[in-house]
Image 1 (spheres, rainbow over the protein chains, first blue to last red):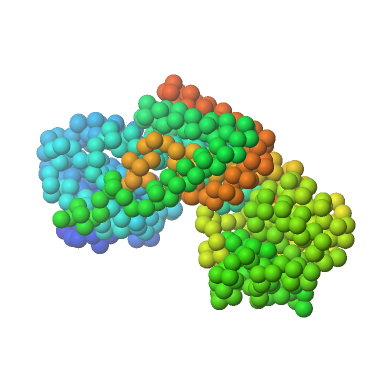
Image 2 (image 1 turned 120 degrees about the vertical axis):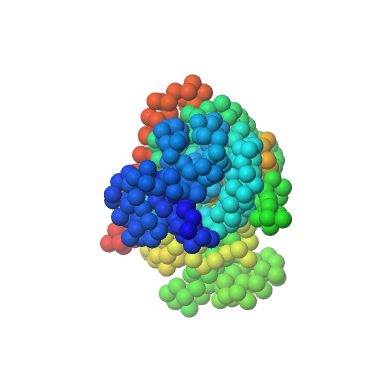
Length: 291
Length: 291
């Protein structure tokens, strides 16, 4: 039986491990640091087996999935670079890719690496908040190396399909980081910035669904998001500047009491949102990718 | 049998009417402009009865709920001010209150008025998108007149409870509008501004839950939100300015690669979000209000 080893069983690692139990002829193995996590994972069926010893698991892994914060992944690749099995595939699932693909250069040439980013999650952390249906209908982004084998790319596709992902986008680390600065990182900063308003706590009892939705992810994992933002600062700065400009443009229209301009701007924005909600180019269905 | 008359059976009016069918000894009556809406409302059990003729319904209404856009409400109050029954209560359910309470001054002294704002909704419009469970666990805000009778205030409370609302906030129109600029109007402009980014359509396949949640309400009713923003421009301008400042502060930290500052800011914001999600002062439970 082949083995998929998850290093780290937090929110994403735990959810992905549980979603991949029963995948083809793979055993799902967890590598964790704390006994409590190991106990929880076994008791709740997150994995088939679990160990606290990387040296026991890594040399036997056909696929190793690193589910930690970005800088931990960078360090882990360096520390354990000689423990991965020749011919095996190593992946990660964190929210930036350029720094990770660069760090993966330390691996020996006989170990393949593919960056992965399943576009799902919640504002909570830890294995106790993980759930196997997290990735149902989510996009799955992968950034293979130029030298990644077709077999490994195909394997990632099948894993994503088994996890219930809606489609798979195959892109470069640079492209991933540029776009994710907008679709993910900006959303987290917007949510945080909304909560910075001095009147926040006077608002209890006045919030509805829009407030809850916009601010949901503000209750984020501070250490992880500090790393994600820091490692993608140039792209994130640019999109933050553009968001400031777009907000400012709305403010000018409102301040001037320019009803026609407000109407025109809302027509433009809402039309874009409706068009964005439709399926379109830029994504590929599993059927298309599996052709 | 007493009568609650809903003038307008759109998303909110339709949902509220349906939620109030069976409320005490009231018959729920709809007044609409289009025969198609009347047919739909009857076929789907949105109301007990429906008419296209306000002159038939208004003089018999013990409670009239105006469920239209703000300016339509202003005009309707003026046009129909002599058709409401003496001793009856007129309400509205729109998203601003100062302009509406001012407009309600045209009513004769024997007709009471209470502004209402149930804090729920979706990004869709029309009776066909209405549903009776919309207000489950939502906040219900009311802005009575100083002269509103205790009986009418109590009636609104019982209606909100029957609709499934979580609690009721009793406030002034000015306070409502100041806070709603933040909790509701800013969220809609943030959602719209995110969709104005030039790279929106290159992002398909890269979005996750945070993007969908933050932008959800951008697909808004343009006419209605133009009115809501225009009628609350001073308060909205102020909160937009503060949001720009808070976003800008994040951008400076990111641009400077100031990891400690990013970490400190995220610690601050995420802590505020977690505290905000807890129950707290500023709202009153139905039990407290019904004492």
